[in-house]
Image (cartoon, rainbow, N blue to C red):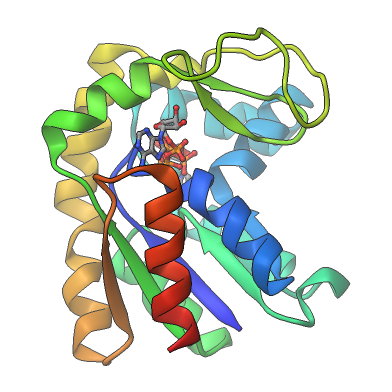
Length: 206
Ligand code: AP5
């Protein structure tokens, strides 16, 4: 199974991707996590990407397309994969189509007014990428691997506003792109986390 998760920042793509990838035994590929790992490891790519992430802008298409093309060749993708955060532009979607066929694009729909509260309360695990929210998870360490949680630099309010603007201009057109191909499946992301997971699974199983 080859899936894409679409949705604005804070829609719950990462949260749901982790569950769905586990359920269908496919690789969870988050381009945001890959870039943050490059930054933490102080690689050349990380140094280039950091300025874009800090401003809430997209990293250039050419960089991200090469990264994903290489990643999906790995052994853990032989059963399928779930792309979380890619494609984010029509150019990326066309490139993806040139190197593989995807089965479904799951669009997680959440009203914009909910997103800022979700993002500003988010705490992340630097090691396994798990996301938590301060309203429902009070501990300072990751439930899964024990690492100390942190707040992402791009989760500041002014950067979030730009990320939402960039989403509207560059990524939202992909909804129509995949709808035209008959591959789009939209779920209500403004529901309890478990309910959203169930809706996605129901759609995929059907
Ligand atoms: P990326 O890491 O992909 O960030 P994003 O798309 O902005 O999405 P988020 O990670 O903010 O949100 P999410 O939808 O995963 O929500 P989450 O599950 O964490 O990208 C970061 C940056 O990298 C980009 O700005 C760009 O610079 C660069 N980049 C990445 N990919 C790129 C690409 N393809 N091209 C170019 N540049 C790229 O949930 C958020 C919070 O809400 C959490 O606290 C969670 O616990 C909570 N929550 C989740 N679901 C619910 C629910 N149903 N109800 C209540 N709370 C919930």
